[in-house]
Image 1 (spheres, rainbow, N blue to C red):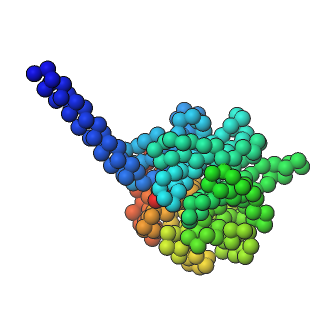
Image 2 (tube, rainbow, N blue to C red):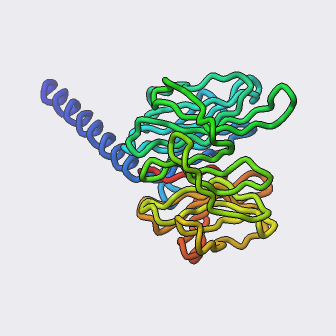
Length: 293
C-alpha cells in the first residue's frame, strides 16, 4: 500500500507539473503587448494581453526600463534601461521568458532609446541623444547586430524614433527646426520627407502591410495620434483628447493601434481602430507600449 501511495503522489506531482506548463504556455501565447509600467519612482517591462490581463513582469534588475520592442520571431524583446543616476541610457535584449538579459550598448552619458528590429531579426536600430561639448543637443540614429556587435552611426540621419519597415528601410523623425516624418535606406541614403508643417511629428511606425504610417504630432496643440498613407498623403487625426497621447503601435493585423495617454500620475494605454473608432482603455499605469509578433 505504501508503494502504491508513493506512485499516486508521483503521478499527481507529474500531472501538476504538466498543468502548470500548459497554463504557462497559454499565458505566453496570450501575451500580445509589451509595455513599461511605473513602480514607485522606477519602471519595469511587462507583458500582457489585449485586454490587459495575465500581466507578467519581464525585467527586474535595471529598474528604469522602457521602449520594449518584440523581435520578428517573437522570442526576444529589446528595450532601454537607465544607469548612472539616469544619465546613461542603454539598449538591452531579453528572451520573452525573462532569461538571457543582456546589455548591448554602453556609451556613458548618452541616451540610447527606441530600439527597433530589422525584418530578419539580425539588426537593431536605435536613437542616441546627448549634448556635445558646446552644449548643443545632438540626435543620432545608430544600428548594430542583434547581439550588440558592429555598432555604428548612420551618419546622414539626424533624428530619432527609428522604426524598420517591411522592406528594410528606416522610418524616423528628423532633427530639424520642426521634426518631420522621413524614410531612408538603412545606410542613410535616399531620404524621403513625408510631412511638412510647423509642428513636431514624432515616433512613426509603419503598418504590417507597409501601406500606412501612424505617428504622433502636436500640430493641433496637444500631442495626438495620426495616420497617413505611406507616401504622406491623406493625413488624418485619430485621437481628440484633453491630454497628450504618445507612442502609437500597430496591431499585427493592422486593424488597431495602441497608444499611451497621459494621466495625473503617469500614463494609461488605449486601443483604437485605425479609422478612429472604438477607443478603449486596456491597461492602467502603462506607457511606451508595443505589439508583439
